[in-house]
Length: 457
Image 1 (cartoon, rainbow, N blue to C red):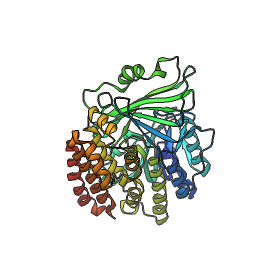
Image 2 (image 1 turned 90 degrees about the vertical axis):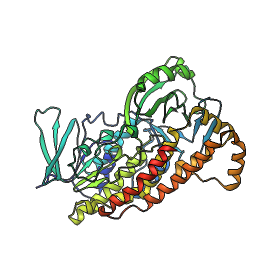
Image 3 (image 1 turned 60 degrees about the vertical axis):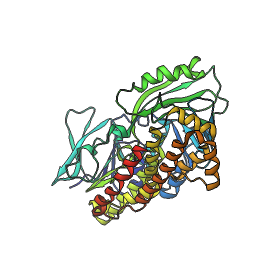
Image 4 (image 1 turned 180 degrees about the horizontal axis):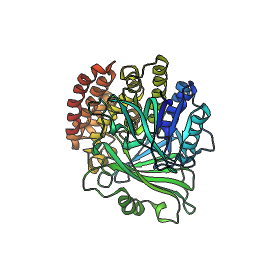
């Protein structure tokens, strides 16, 4: 006997959308979160979301429009700033139009949608672990904060939406095709504060700023995301590499002394740190009776670490496929498999390509970035195209002009051309994602040479 069709561990963006999608289709859903009901939605985040994600979700699962009281400010572009802080590119286009929003209110809205659709929300409750029967997932153990005993809840499908820890993913039995652990080099640590700035006015609050500095935030960046003329979300993130300072230390030492608004009297609204995966998606996000969504599935943009839109997209696809499997009465890995290619086609192909680009960014210096910005060897339009499609495509005439401009950095130009090819190579592999679990081992073998080459680029 089962208690629910689906139990979802974690009521973040991905978990709530999965619950909403399934409940709307008439399935019994339990959405469990360790936070209190009132605290769901609080998370270390840049608090920004591209409007294109919301349009896609409206078409895919009829997601309603985000209420205006959730939105802090409309976003119309992003400025990318070189380490010397003298050169910048403006990115403006479909993927940079969106919203700066109140993360707590946004999370409350999403979990409210799931409840309204019919999902049961069990807050202030921890998911302690998987229940396995016959070597397959059959349920979870949970414990509410006012109880001293675990309770077993069984379901046809268990969804791990526990975030970067992937707590349930790590408990899968040996032999699972799912990657149970994520390497530290594929994770980003972050710190961010939200302030009111009564003494400082942001002149262009509709433009977000991203600042690169490989010495301070290797493989990451500092962000300054205004939420109006007198409010800002400011933070930084970088790769989890040995010997680096904590993100709070870097924030205090670097950010506080570099930006003018940080030197004024500020009203701190929130201050927190976190971890996010920044790599290609988990190679398979399903096993028998089991699915992964959101950070647990590594559904995060590898370059900028944003994962709200892509995680919601993952939750929508997972909900649709889970619903179809339940209607067939078959929740085996084969029946749930279609979630993988659907997500890969919608976002995973681009995500894998951006993972290649991430390795390129890890291996460039401040000097390289300053030179590329100054000589316009890389333009804002290039980076916008990369963010939209995962493809770096420069015409022959433009390539020649940039070759002349970059004569002092021929090795850098050669690396840019090489990474562009590797990005296309990985996209071709992901476009050929296997149609069943049997094809996964051979498909994985095609990935490793490309990624090893990217790490050397």
